[in-house]
Image (cartoon, rainbow, N blue to C red):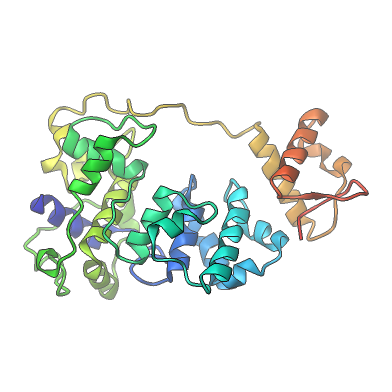
Length: 334
């Protein structure tokens, strides 16, 4: 295990995407916001939204006090805008019950609105440095390929996958942490893996940031590095095995990539022409109206099917994403 960890840590310190919520440069609340925004959304799209969001609402208390219309507007085109209101509901509880301090306790985190196992574990690991297995699609894929010689099957996390994630998770004692005293990968005796993939364009050029990457607890570093590898190199359909730092240790590669891509359990959902697209167009029109109510007639160019348009409007109302006034006009909630 130690050669695998050292090679992965070396790669992480050299080529991890330099995202603004990484390497101790934000608060635990900022980490939570990044995780909620990143659900089902490409990371490259999240960065500008997260930066603008945190500038306006840097903590739970400020978000809790914000008008819902401003929150929905700031969410923009991140998709699944119900997440914005759930995040605000979470902020209200953090501000009211925990004195504006995000809990450093797994059970308290999962009890908050919109927070599940993955998000709670990610906050515990990435924000607080607690030793806990973080399991998402990318991590499952990498661990399954490297250690189990097969594709991840998707679906619910199995007991075997969860046990594997815990078994390979490094301990955080300083004596077992190759970077505990601030050494870089060169001091750990690891050669440059040369594996940068798409993440190389945003690698850690800043020596101070690279040093910070090696000062993180080993378990947090492992969770982030495995996830990053799955997102940028060990991808689902066309893994870049020729530049992967774990190529020499990967059982899946040695076996000839058996069943590559078979883990996808359902086809990629189309977006064009769906109710999701129409809902998004309605919200965008209300955002652009800057508080001026709109009639259904003004929204009809967005959808030629009047029954479908009505269905989307009602569903947005049910989700609390818009309000229908007594005059029948539509507006973002206050």
